[in-house]
Image (cartoon, helix red, strand yellow):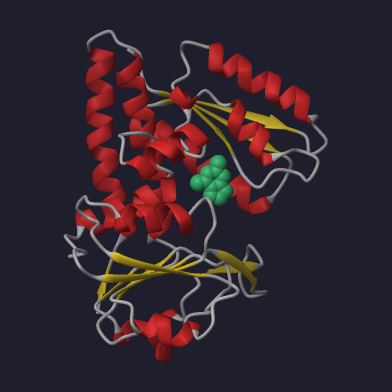
Amino acid sequence: MQILDGKLAAQAIKDGLKISATQRVIEGKKAPHLAAILVGNNGASETYVAAKVKACEETGFKSTLIRMEEDFSEYKLLEKIESLNQDPDVDGILVQLPLPKHISDKKVINAIDPGKDVDGFHPVSVGKMVEGIPTFLPATPYGIMLLLEHYKIETKGKHAVVLGRSNIVGRPISILLSGSGNPGNCTVTICHSHTKDLSSICQQGDIIVAAIGIPEFVKVDMIKPGAVVIDVGITRVADPSKKSGFRLRGDVDFDAVSPNCSWITPVPGGVGPMTIAALLKNTFNSCIQKN
Ligand code: GUN
């Protein structure tokens, strides 16, 4: 078994972006600028957004973090997005999900200028992705594709089994893996909560992408020996022995599954850092397209 080290691959991408961003500034051009909006006090979201902002700083990008109280109105959030749409200095806008219940994800995502939609969630971005037209790809699936590319994992003709059909991971990664690029050209099966015989479908997978958010759901008897396993899960599980009071668990039973597969992503340090590297790549590309 070999580790798909997302920390290492993400660092290589960030190093490249830092050189390019620094070069832009030396030439008197603006640095790429990401604006992130965080509504409420969801602990996991706070951590993710802080990591995104820190990555911007480390890469020579500008970042603006806009924090809003849990009871902030949907209307005011839409107004804020519109002002960021109009701001010529801002290249990328992301609104961290999930949002409080009184705010519609769909309305918020639709309000972002597709030209600044570095999360790739806007219907225009999704439509282009489905058509294979260059666009901002959603950060987590894009990060997975970059990780497969980094480690030169052969995907052509392989059977990829995706667990989960979310708009953020499951659906888009299915589209990308079945696309005609490299990585790509997979035969893809999407499984979800109504899938029958899940275990036997997983056993047919040369590549497994687990994105369901149930800690250690994927057991060793569900995996074909030698499979490539991508674990997108990152759930906080109570652990009183930790200072934080929790530890992070993926969707895959890593200890049992890892000896049986060819490649596997750890949690943490696998898909998570790649998501951030992909977001930075999108922000950089947005900046060079606009300027
Ligand atoms: N919540 C979980 N993943 C993501 C992501 O990639 N982007 C945003 N904006 N929110 C998320």
